[in-house]
Image (cartoon, rainbow, N blue to C red; front, top):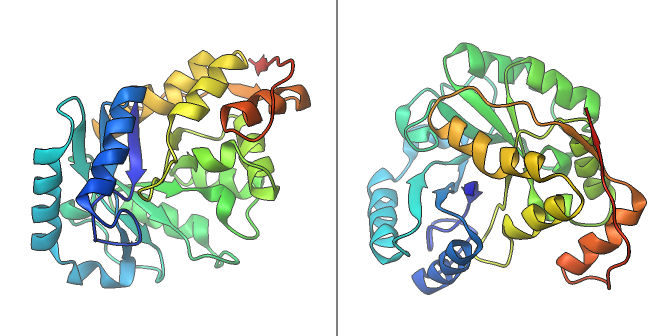
Length: 261
């Protein structure tokens, strides 16, 4: 599996604070089958020309030297689109050596014209990957479709796919409509991972969708290849008890899945 959205560079942002904390997460990732992670510290688009690149490279290099040999660690950023029209074509902003960048919108209510801004980024020759659409106030399946029509890739956080509340209902609605291209942990030096979502999707009868979202499409993204459409998977109420068991919330009951062609 490949995790394109993590905050594991120690001391760089609000993620892992120490190398020990980062290495604990990476060791757990390696045990669960993750072979590549992208470290994506927070960065405001309006400050993209003032990035402390030397410090970032040094921390990345040191983490690579200490990490399990089975995991490749690539670099990127999670770019907050706090101002429209910013030039985001600089190679150092991209996910690894790809032509893609990970972007997010400000918390709270979405600003107007988000689809227009994503289309502008795409037309500049960069592929925008929208992080955790399920988090934004005022987002809808219709708007997410508009983002995809503008050329964006959609990345959902596993914690929301597996959680409770309105954001999780939206995330599973996205899954049911085939609107999730990639799953990522958004790990901040904590327990979040791809593993629980991967296991749950297999358990409910959607192993192909899981493989596409956790392995095939992340690999394609990082190598500038075409992503594979993810089949829709309808999550029925009976599946949620198994989900809660996997994330340690509740004892499991009967489960079943309905993949949609």
